Amino acid sequence: MTARLGAGRYIDAAEIPSGTITSAHELATADSAKISGVLRTQPGARTVVSIMHPRMDTTHHVLVPELLARGFAVWTQGTRSPNNDLNLIHEQALLDVAAGQVFLRDKGFSSRITLGHSGGGTLFAFYHQQAGLAPEHRIATAPSGRPVDLASADLPLPDGAVFLAPHPGQGALLQRLIDPSVADEADPLSVLDDLDPFATANGFAVPPTSSAYSADFVERYRAAQADRIARIDAEARARVALADEARARFKTTQDPADRRASVAPRILTIYRTDADLRFVDLSLDPNERPYGSLFGRRPDLTDYGLVGFARLVTPEAWLSTWSANTTNADFLRCAPGVRTPSLFVELTGDAACFPADAKAMVAALGTHDVDHRRVAGTHFGGPLRPGEPTGASLAAAEIGEWLAERFPG
Image (cartoon, rainbow, N blue to C red; front, side, top):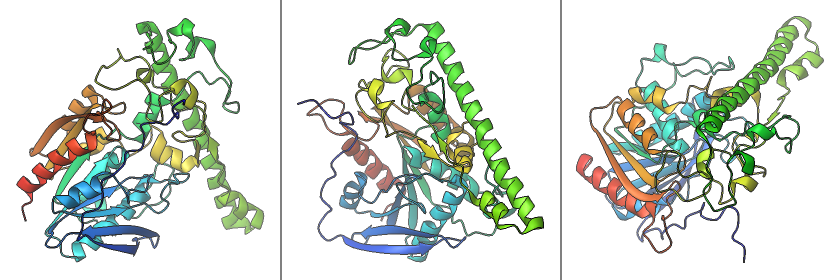
């Protein structure tokens, strides 16, 4: 039977340990949004680990039972619209993080640790950065100009940070993944032949044979990726400007038509965002990663599919989350603001955080108490090869050891 295109993306978790006390909670954010979370505790647990991702529900994250088995409480929560990042504004997501941290502080845990896996790493780095600033120095607006009141919000600073396979931020990641050979943004099948990553003339090989792109093609391709991001930036700004102009008109005219024009979402459709050359050419930035992308074993197919980053997105969310040029949620820019004890766990078969990325991220962290560990596994915590230990189980052992050393009891 042919394997599913997304095979390997989902990892089965262990059973929740017996004796675990589980409670679900709905919390209000400082701007009156609602977020939900699940607290799981073991008797006597004094340290709580928060697992969160800006886009995904982490309730059943593979590390939850692993951490509980080691005696730690675990808090999993979403942002205000989990599993739907159509209008993901990272600056608002910080208020969602804060609501969870206020809840855990008020529950009386002696230590609160953030654990950011993949995109959760940058979200938590961004939170640490802003929580560590005096209120008047915090960001006041999202990149689109939308006001976000971080200054008056209660942003409790966590006691430590764990980063598991963090990518460099959704904007920086997308610039590596976006397919620059799209000739027409309205046509998902349009192709510029000289930039097509899946053309044999450009170095692509039949999967799963590793492709071999020339240095010239790689250079042209990456420049074209940046150009496509910039073009979408311009379109996003233009659509934001239309809403702003309508909003300004409404203040004068009170015309319902202007009010409707000010709230119309003007959604962007971004085709083909699963095309990092490193997914299929394993000689580029080599590590132990298997052939394929974060979304499956055949990037030449998944690049054209429904599942992918930033497929449907408001202009405001594009500028806040997906543009490398405008997002505030960039790991390397936020990392100097992380000043608590930190553990960075690199997975040696990662296809989103490469060895040079990990080295740069660790060096950028603002704390002197940082431990960089490497374990064998893929980005989502799978094994490198069938029958080997999962990356999640190996990472859990390192994380458990580090937590026990830094936050005993």
